[in-house]
Length: 94
Figure 1 (cartoon, rainbow, N blue to C red):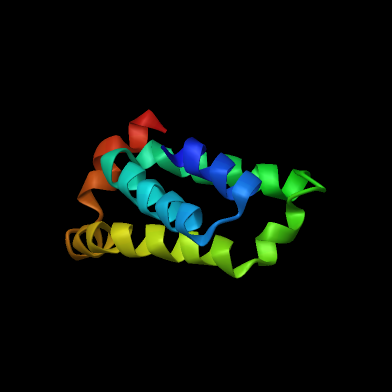
Figure 2: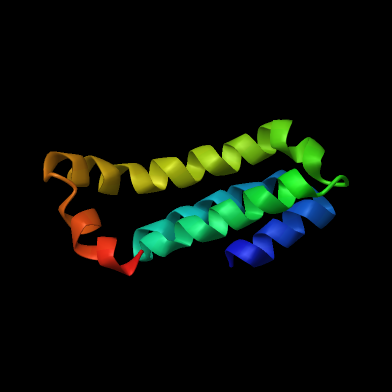
């Protein structure tokens, strides 16, 4: 769903697609920490694409990132309060 709404955001540029992108990216990060690679892949694509590079300074892109962060924030806060125990448990996977 992250990739689907990323493509829809690029092609159609509708705000709702950017919102769903952030929502599904946040959920992906909650379900699997490795989803951070999806974010970095999208970011790398935007950096390397002359056609879409302008989106790096677009408010809609930042909105997606902020939505994903706010969805992930309770998990980060819990981990902070518990010495990042879930990150320690999955560090060998990285």
